[in-house]
Image (cartoon, rainbow, N blue to C red):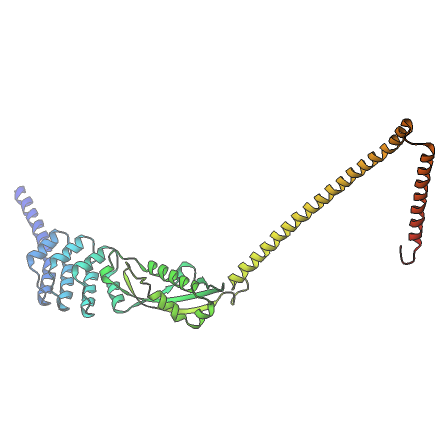
Length: 342
């Protein structure tokens, strides 16, 4: 008796589970049938066993059928089990079909699994997206470039891009586009002869950058590059330097001046040293003269001893020396008393 009761309870419990299981798939089945997007009951049963939500698969298939696209639930299940966003992929395929863009389910699923928003990519293909260059979110709002005449220019550009669905998997992102466009603008301004050419014809810069093929290996196709703003640096701020070339020339001239001053100081020091050396040599020569003069009395004494000099000769020489000394003293005194001389 107890075994029969336990068996009955188990049977009732199994029946409740089976009934709930049937109810979970009968609703999507009926909805699919009435939406003219039929799904076999066994397929729904298999979805339940594989832990795939039947309602989600039926919803995705109904959207595809209503859009005029035929796709079985098998690829949808595979994409769900791979971790993809089935509804987003289906909506992207429908949007691409309405826009007459070739987007197979396999490519859309690959884009979704790659971590990109495939629906947003399709929207970007239909309605091009505008990107600011440089990105204001990075903390800078203007590109800083210097023309060949040394004048700094602040430039802001807007890049219109369209998503390239064929290169969306593995293609570079918006940051690459911004970096390449910024590099191209700085290079184009740097090759300009004067900043006036940039201010007069900014479209020449954008055309030159656009012709460089900056969208290669990226997930986008550049539609246009527009120079939104260009101005000379230093106009809006006191601390800004507008003419970098003039600043560099000024600093170079200042450095040359200091170098020449240092060279002049070196030459002056050498001249002073040479002057001191000459004075020392004069003193040395004077010492030699005094030394030579000191030998004169010795020579006279030797001449007396040898008989080569007489007393009268000595006196006459002394008179000549005294007379010469007197004449020098007289001439020196007269020169001091001459008018106009001090």
